[in-house]
Length: 165
Image (tube, rainbow, N blue to C red):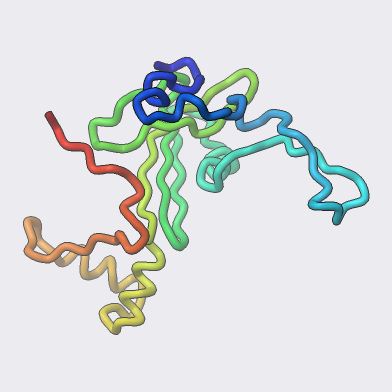
């Protein structure tokens, strides 16, 4: 369903239907206030809740369908604005909410590699690579199909493997 509500069928199936789940709100909304455990004299409003990659999508002004942002760091994240309604990706990307306000929900396709940058650093520490650029040179020299695959899954794949059928 596309009603921006907790999915009762999934909660029931996983035995989570007795949880007291928080109210679903847009990523730009009033969530409360904090004094940072008494460190601040005056409380500060919390007026946004959003993950780092999704916040970067908004910060990079991905306001039009097709606009895309790529974040590279310890991991990597690609988010592409797909409009006001979720759509299934033919390439296996996750359909997600990129960001939302009281008046708009921007859906996105998301692809992530949890250990992208850290994998490059590991390969450098093992003496396999001398630089990040060397990884591109190696990747471009390989013909597909290949007998060697590098799966950057030191901290998991970041998504389930979906089988057809």
